[in-house]
View 1 (cartoon, rainbow, N blue to C red):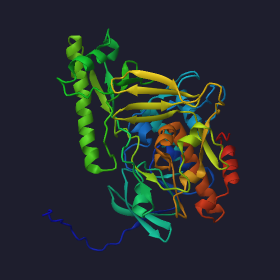
View 2 (cartoon, helix red, strand yellow):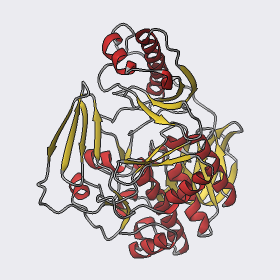
View 3 (cartoon, rainbow, N blue to C red):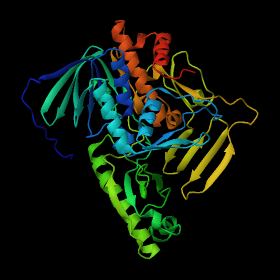
View 4 (cartoon, one colour):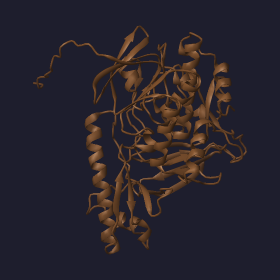
Amino acid sequence: MSSPVFAITEQARQTPVVFEADLCIVGGSCTGIFAAVRAARMGLKVAVVEQNTLFGGMAVAAQVNVWNSTFDAFHEQRIIGGLTIEVVERLRKRGAVQEIPPGKRNQFYFNSAELCVELDELVREHHIRPFLCGRVVAAVREGNRVDAVIIEDKSGRRAIRAHQFIDASGEGDLIRRAGFAAYQRDQLQPANLQALIYGFDELKGDYVRQAIKNRAAEFDYPRDNSTPWLMNWPGAPGIYNTFGARLNGVDASNADDLTATLMEARRIHRALLDMVKSESGGQQLNIVAWAHALGVRETWHAHCLHQLTADELLHGENFPDAIANGTYPIDVHSPEGTFLRYLDGREETVQRDGTQHWRRWRDKSTFTPRCYHIPYRSLVPQEAENVLVAGRVLDADRDAFGGVRVMVNMNQTGEAAGVASALALKNSVMVADVDAQLLRDELAAGGTIIC
């Protein structure tokens, strides 16, 4: 016999409307804030709901402090502009960003704490109504339109009404609660937890790799693809942002999975430092700060008007409604290893033990596209009249998502969703009927590079 299912019946209640907006954005990542800024610059009254104490999402709360290349596949021409570059310039003035010359996969390493302050300033400058530490727990839907979202925060249960909505939550919190179609893959890309650590500069040998090789079993440390990445923390010499071991089989949209994973990830970090101390003869490494959130690559996707495919990406399909560009390779992490496929025809496989193998998936003589593109249709949920998605909730197949999921690409989807929401409202049309050329023109006028 199955165990009985218990439930508590709550009394009917009235939820006060705390704010009425032209546009409400669920998720205050860079993607969400960039959507808010672009919409506010077009005259909209905007609200942003963010579950963390900080704006910035993966770039800030999860301390993923790297933005990838904004240049084309030949490293000659910038193909990503807009608010990504605006914010980089703001960080540059504070000495909070380090730039790598074109030619590498990564371009900017930044101080996440300083980025958070710049996002706060953008919110203030554009008179955006912030709701930090707020979670969307329900949506009020009438037909194919969302009328309001219900949030819960320190003040209780409250409602925000709006004419337009954007789901930039990363987990599809709005579209799933509103009942729009969404899907989750059988095998999700792994998560990581980051920590700021002091002491790596004092190590005189490659004790990290040695410790993992010699002491992983002793400290119950995962060996496969688990050598940490050490990123500089601009403005703080000697502090390294340390990307923890990949954690497979994690659904970060599930509360119990999330709790267990956060605790296990912190244990693994501590195990690594203890291993290195033992291997090096006593070198002390100290955790300075934990990331506020788990670094999540993937959970849910919206079923949109178009699913972006790997074939479209790798052949540089030039969509008439293209709203974002990118060159980051297809990059799929799994328990079996990591698979990367580049626009120039190279293919890299990193096996479980860390060994690399290179081959070509396309002949050298074949045309190499300058970049790939993301179409607006991949941000428009099926049936939705006034809801868009931005960020990693967009619709893409497994391999295509492995390429477009990085922040320099997702930032652009936020800008596009914010501008499209403003155009839909101003022209009294459904989001699916926003004129693609008008959208592209408006994006270009605001600094987006349209290729």
